Image 1 (cartoon, one colour):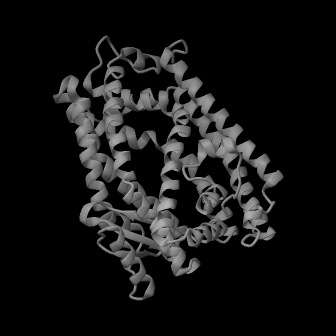
Image 2 (cartoon, one colour):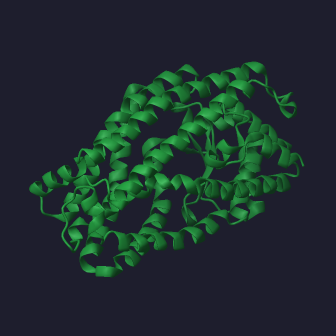
Image 3 (cartoon, helix red, strand yellow):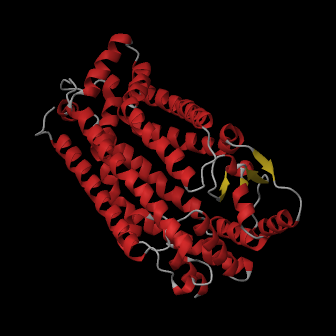
Length: 421
């Protein structure tokens, strides 16, 4: 480990900076919640009571107290694994088992993630069976939780394996152009996943049943028709089997598009409110938000891969973290380079959060405005947002700086004021 190495310096500073900033933001939110969390805003005086706000504060405080040790230990583990030479020792051992770079990369990906996964287990268990159950959200059993974790692991492995195989093959056979071809592979693969996800992957975890005939289905189908949105169907997801939290979303691409409503959402909201929530989601479609994000993402993917292609060929990157490398980096080591770059620059991504969240909040305001227009009034969406906020025990007000870094959606009061303006 070379502490004078520029990549090591960037890694250490980024880790400490991200940790410190997150600690500061969470502390600001905690302090603000203690002072103002139980105050009922005048605009919500007819919808929210003190008991709900008190329960919300207790719920958020419980999550915050669990987050502190979790964040501290995760940061310590991240630094320790790098400083003690865990990763060079791991790849050295793997090379004694196989000289196939694909299997080496796959083993490195799986085995390298074990320490972090083991550390997260007790916190995940306490979050699910300590906090979520205590506040009436979780319906999980230990057996169900273990099954979900196992299924999630193999689904992720199944998704990552072909990408990893393509990456290693491109390293070997396409020389300096691998980044361009890998970008194309990634985009095609992402499109393929968006098509097969609702049909083959999502049903592994939840049961999806067609929405029953009735007023709700008729209203929603009429709304879809009015907006020119063609979906393969309206489906209800058995979210209550695991959690009391509620949501609705679109998924899929092309003919595989479908509208999914949580069963908890149907129980909590009126037909007018559900229609308004769907109107909001349709607002994203009508304003082409997904297409715009794709048009932004595509050049960003290629630009990032181009920069990565330059940095992974620098022996300095590998030497700084204890990996042996000569004057030329062999293709068999380039997946290590990508992993190291994710360590070096990963925590600096927090600086992009305000920009990305600002763009996302702009889209959410547009979608809210569309729902107001298509439904003729913004009041059903207002009451739906208030109910969902109450049912999910979400904070009503947070410090401005906290929402800038952490909220991809506008805070509740801002959305209601915009809808009623």
